Length: 262
Length: 295
Image (cartoon, rainbow over all chains, first blue to last red):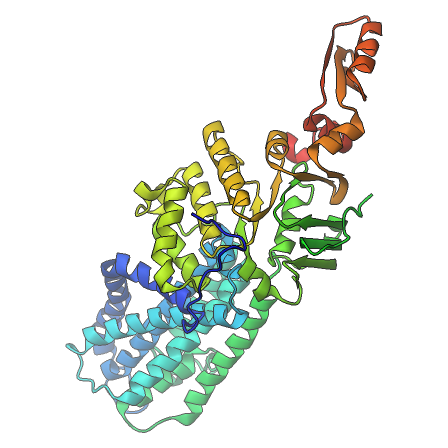
């Protein structure tokens, strides 16, 4: 057996996208933990639907700004949350452990792939995780709430999942310790979860908060999903906002990744 | 004293020119220059915190130098990172395998990252698993591997894409003597098959038995470079050792007769022996216990 050196060069698989191995690893985890993921992705949305939709929502009878029922309002919000929580968190956790705990991120940095491919691989793995969670929620609510899926809505889900995958990569690259992880969760992820028009309409928040929550990337996402699910046209402005966030996360993440010096 | 062997010939595969790395006020590597020839096993020997790992990380593109230039396989590490990465294999000091994947999956992931052709991939992985003696545990998750098994898998992973240059950072740290010897064998077989090896170690025996040439590094500076026998010869091939109130004293002589003559003049018990690389190392790096070791 020849172990290496110059006498024999290995043939290369040229058409394989350079980010594919990162996705492949993600799919290996999916295969080994599929039922766990499925149960996890169902739990939080189910709690939101039961407590807000069928519990508080039914009793309080919130006056919805557009005249829809609270449950109809809630479903796209819960889908947005599923995309957000799982897309962002899966990448953050993976990068946190791979970078700072197990150091396996270095194996990726040592591979002959560009920084862009590395970024894309992680962002796409977050996107896939978000989409899986979103589809699990849809599969669940379709039996509880009358909704009509359409391609604009599915396309919006794909766009927003990619946006959140990119967000996850950025946060994952910025973390330096477990305390940072806790800070990111408490100061960014939790406020966004509850204040971005996912569970409560932005118009029903205190007046002071209303303009501020539009600084969260989840706010245009919730509105985009709600509008496209209602089938009332394509809100280009909201899609552009989500695209803008994605571009910003990409630029910052790519810059951070290319400046890594450990 | 830090400009050894930078003249690059046609067979030079690693060239380091006046490289420095600073982290704020701390200088980890300070103006180091040397080169490694094709087919060598080159050892960087030094105490903990001497700058060995930083140097390897700079050579393997993970850390950017503050000053100086590094060339690997003829490519500038600063400018052509992807070309460098195609030609090198890296065995890090820490186990950076994917714990939740099996041994085989770890090798497959690496093969995918290096775009190893599908037709060759499985055969190559099976060969390497057999080579490092892990074929029976190939489908176990890495989190269930012992330290020695993980280390052998790290070596197999670094070889999947047939690199021409292999970097090993403290390859046998924390391993039992049997596993250590097995890894030494692996390194020598790799080298026989044409792989140039640069390893760091603070085990003197490892450097002495494996390396064709050794560079001794301390406080970020290269303080000596040569073959183990050249380094010993510079100090004196024979050592007279005796214990007095200040501790163990060692004196070095070019010939055994000079050493014996000196020993006979001492009015205490003495030992006359051949100088070893540890003597060179201690003489050059000093005897004080380093804080990182003492803590």
